Image 1 (cartoon, rainbow over the protein chains, first blue to last red):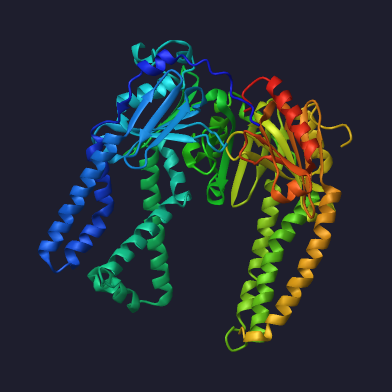
Image 2: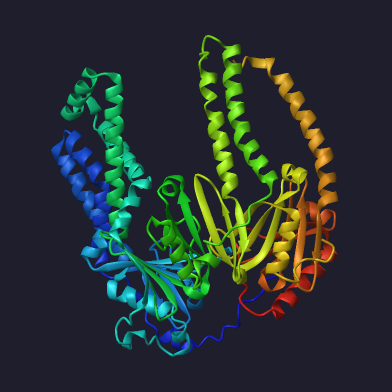
Length: 509
Length: 121
């Protein structure tokens, strides 16, 4: 039994007049080029290690031809059309697919153009519907259309007024009515880049890839002259100095990497409120991105701080909205920036004072929550120490005696972590928002619109029951789907539900 | 260090003891805990045995209502009612309802949600 969708008064005339169109023919070149770039290491291996030159060349040529044919087929078999009601995409040669989303279900439009796409003047358009139901598409991607067509789609798909008009009229408008700028790039924010770990992660991935490739080619790292010389130099100095030099190198590479990634990702960043009722985030140096979020579907905003960012008084701001999955960084409204700026942008996105949203003064949770934080941090640490000790007693030959005293270092760290986790717990009820905060290594403050809450969940584990605490989840259609207030008292949870959703509590509880 | 049959007997004994305890205790606790209610405004559920979970979904936010009956449930004339909302946090489930009660509940809820305006997000 399904509650039917709103009655569809489908005007069939429009459906039939709208033409199916192909994606841009330049995609015949773009896909093979992108795949070739990905295959370069393989090609290099074939060309370097193979003995039979005729075989090598014919294999390489065959690969290129296959990619070209595949790209052409993909372009030939893919068509899309935008009608007054739906966006439809047909694709596949043997396994034909037809995918379609209703226009009034489109919540976000994400336009991305990587370097190869940009050389050809193309953009990928991704439409997010935020549907979590089976059988309904959560997103649909057009890869790729000309950049101008992508802009036109962005303007028309989130513009509800064109639904009533017979045809999309945005094309006739005077080009680009200017939106109100909420935030723009400030290069002094670059100081927050080293506080993100993206650089180290990327460099680590590159090094791993390089080592793997060298391994495939039958090279040991020591075969490379520079590496060998560095190794010899290092073995000449004292171990302390060697370690210091290695740490310095890793730090230097990590910082450089994160600066580069920050610059690439946030070059030309601008957050604007567009006249058509959307928030628009533009950014990117090599790969350009333009994310449009329908403001009516914005359910809240989040300020998140990793422990490193927190140490530097920095933070990130992102949107809580339908049409964006929670894990994707797609909802980012701001690069890592000063915390105050993150709160300001989060507040501005929600059209409210930050002190009534993510920067609201929070109510601290009961003291029993601190006990729970301490137990949960200390118990695993203590167990590890006990295990190390037990293993040493049982198998003294294999497990050194020094292991468990070293493990004791974990205990004070666990205590500090637990105290910080407790201090960060908090919640508040403001005029239009429910604000919750939790976490230590990653502290997240979420302001959720009261109207955006579509239900409640109260969870209580056996341990929580002993001390009268519960975890109260505000359920929403947006973002992660539920936003918890961890370890509030049962009475407070009931009070919060009653205040936000009057009439929802059954009389007996 | 795993030396053949030395561990087998304790493992089997532990499994049997724990398994029996689980089968005896868990269903009783669950039956004591589980509750549901449908008011003119919302649907409420309470479930769990060691941990508890209350759920509230206002009727205006309900998207679909399904009833399911597995083979065992058909034999015992029971049914499960699943109530989904637009959230990724998962549906409300009422397990082991009397089949007729379940059908009536699903009918009532469908009617009530059809009357409620909006697209439930």
